[in-house]
Amino acid sequence: MRLRLRMTGTALALSALALAGALALAAGCGGSGGGGGSAAETPALQAAMEAYLKKNSMDLAVVRLQEIKVSGEQASAAVVLKEREAIHNVTVTWKATFRKAAAGGSAAAAWEVEKVER
Image 1 (cartoon, rainbow, N blue to C red):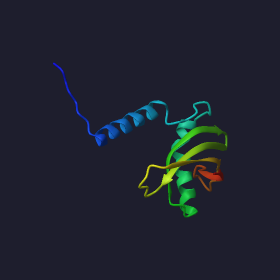
Image 2: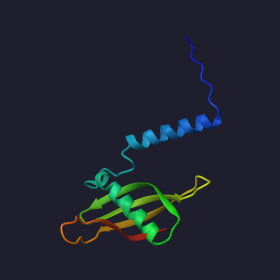
Image 3: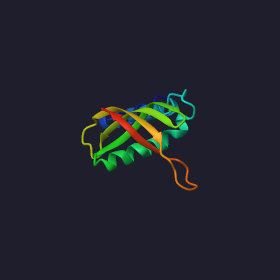
Image 4: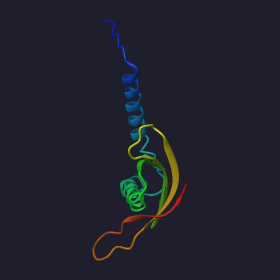
């Protein structure tokens, strides 16, 4: 039995996008793996970058973090960004450094953006 599958351009593009996403997840979401907990810190670093973009009135959204390096209270990452309401699939990559902000009371220290290189 031979299965014939016809895909339109849109369906083919969506399949390619799904495959790319699966490969990115399998690769560890772009984490460096050598930074000592970089994969665990990814959501917190991404949240810090989103807060930085909002605070500075930038209409950008984080696509993903790459080359994450965490060393104690400091971290760095290549941050891939796109326009929040993007019509086109254009991205830019910025280099960001993060530091853990002093927490008050019993709250855990949170990451915040220290510097961005465009």
